[in-house]
Figure 1: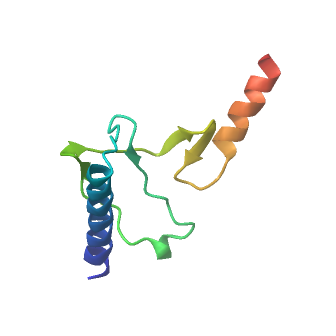
Figure 2: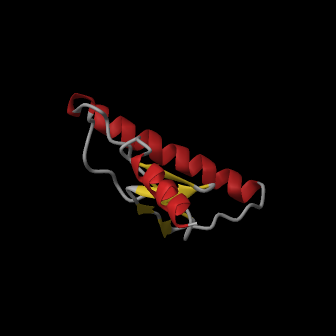
Figure 3: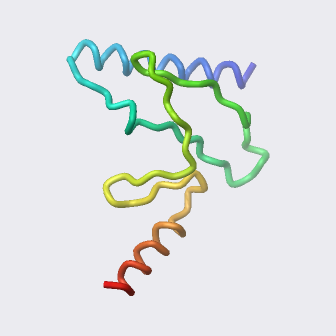
Length: 94
C-alpha cells in the first residue's frame, strides 16, 4: 500500500504541474526535464526500486542518476564528490 500511495502522489503532483503549465501558458521543455530518485543512505529506508514512467504533455520523462543545475552537478547519491572532482580538475587545467 505504501508503494502505491507514493507513486500516486508523484503522478498527482505532475498532473497539477501540467495543469498550471497550461493555465499560465508556460512551455515545459521535456528534453531538459528529467526525473531523479534519490537513494536513501540505508536500504531500510528504500520504498521501491521501480517507478513508473512519468509524462508531461504526453512526453515521457527520462530518469537520470545525475544532472547539471546552475553549474552544479546534482547526484542521486546526495553527495558532491563528482562535482568537487570536476571543479578541482577544471581549476588545475585553467
